[in-house]
Image 1 (spheres, rainbow, N blue to C red):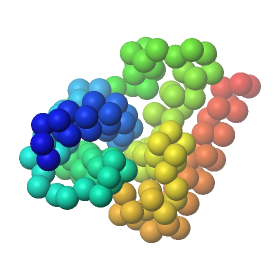
Image 2 (image 1 turned 180 degrees about the horizontal axis):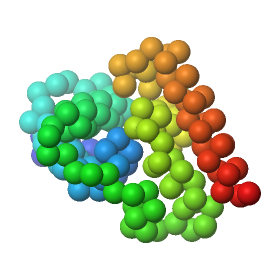
Image 3 (image 1 turned 180 degrees about the vertical axis):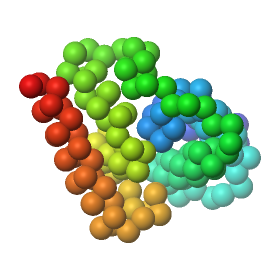
Length: 158
């Protein structure tokens, strides 16, 4: 990959990679580290990509692997409380803050597929490939995440 291609892909997908890492790690500093490592791997990569979507899927997969490795490391930072993370992101409405806080309070196994499905608009099949899960596992995680969110958000309204 030449510098021009790398610059294009890095600029285009850095925010997506950051959001994936943040959803997994629950900590802005760790997410930023994962983004830097993923982009470095892209720069050094000798893989042949079939197009932009292939690069995006590859970056998300690499980011998830880096996050899993970091989660195993002993010096992992303590996740930032969702309420504090919400303060660092500009939201247009109060409901968006409540939803973000509720999503970030979910366990990582539910946050990441939920993010990929609703924000990156990947299909269940694509998420299964990216996360190296079965389609039924992705469907189950999405269903459980929705149920948890429904319960959490309805409790807040009471």
